[in-house]
Amino acid sequence: MTRFFADRIEAGRELAQALKRRWPELAAPDRPSAPVVLGLPRGGIVVAAEVAGALKAPLDALIVRKISYPIQPEMAIGAIGPNGKTFLQPYIDTLDLTEGMIERAAARARAEWDERNRVLRAGKPAPDVKGRVVVVVDDGIATGATAMAALHWLRESGARRLIMAVPVGPEQAAEAFAGVTDELLCLLSPQDFYAVGQVYRDFSQVDDAAVLELLRGR
Image (tube, rainbow, N blue to C red; front, side):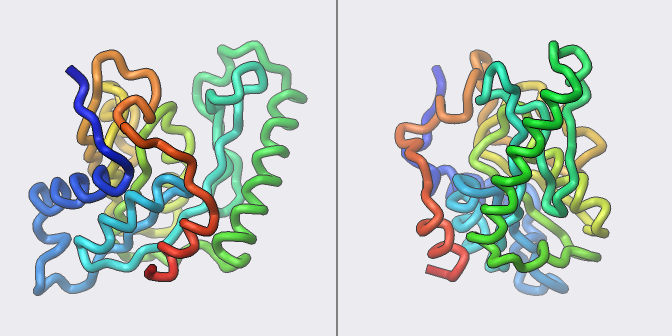
């Protein structure tokens, strides 16, 4: 029987407690410095806000945008990373896509990335993570494309330790993320997993105003 979270807030609270149990040093009073908690907008920011509060850590947004499969828009074939670079899924060569189709899909995603960056970060550069412990939070992993793009950028930017933390994801997530992140915490991996929203009773869309309020500390 599949467990359910009431909403992203409850999922964030459970995720925060799981992080503290597994890695108590993240919230230790004598830690040298607090980890940086980065949420992936928009839904991931709601979850990340609960994590940041519990760890007494700074919260920021990491702007990543999915590149949609033209025939099936909900499926990701890649993502635009926090630095604006394109990340494509390894399996893209198995799809019936021309180079032009991929370029057009990436251009649409880049335009959306530019808009999200303008609205949510006011055009500010991505967070400075060099030498820091970074906890990347989303409301779940589906294809993993956006999270992969974020993690690759964080590694290239000098993060000392990367922890990917999500309430739900597929059973093969650990294998897929091996070598990309140092640690992966996924609370639920239903055998019949088909979508992130299946474990939330309330999976309402999160708007920009709600994200900005959380980033400003409510």
